[in-house]
Length: 282
Image 1 (cartoon, helix red, strand yellow):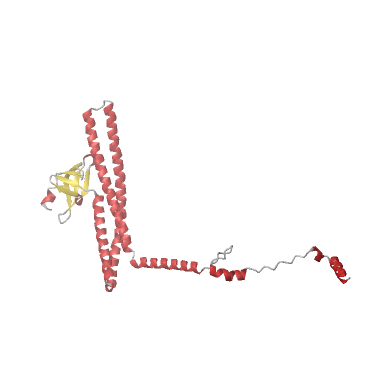
Image 2 (image 1 turned 135 degrees about the vertical axis):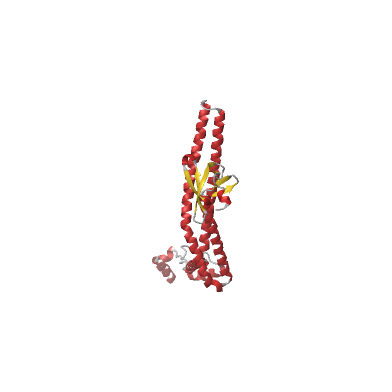
């Protein structure tokens, strides 16, 4: 146990936003003398055993760091480093195909590491959601206390000084809740961004090329089928060009029959013809 670890005993413990939590009254050490956990007297909440890694000594005060914050930072750090190495490996293979066989072993190792972090990530996500629910309830309680103090002040049940004290304390607590909520939201967004980067890095480039090729062939076959399909005959006579109009008109246009000679009524009557013949004979 180092001198700094011994100095932790008897000091006040506060959270990251300065709220008093309790006082360190003792430690639990391992066989090698290193501190495993710290006992903090939290008043009405009793004695709390806090992991030593969650405490940071700053002068006469010990700062408490939430467990979700440490776990999420560790996850982001490990996942980010593994992802960077995986991208570097892909770049090396793309520049030198001779190293592809050797790189596959390391590639599978990094993929296995990312898969092992998935379970840890699910647990951290659940903790973050649970903490957000707790913070929301705390914010509602603080606002209720402030509103009730205002009612008491207006009804002359408490003095203005007491109301201002309640207002100051509840406002500080609401600000702390707001800051922690924003920090959790940032952590959730960072984890989501890492998930997207991991998915794009794990999918092999060959798969993208194959999908693009299949898509191109399908489109090409569709275009060929459309081109090979004969158009249906139009329902009306299409307009023809001047060079084609002569030949097509000769084939399609029928020659009209000559008009019949119109006979006079005298020609149509045989009796009149016979009479004229007899006159000429006489």
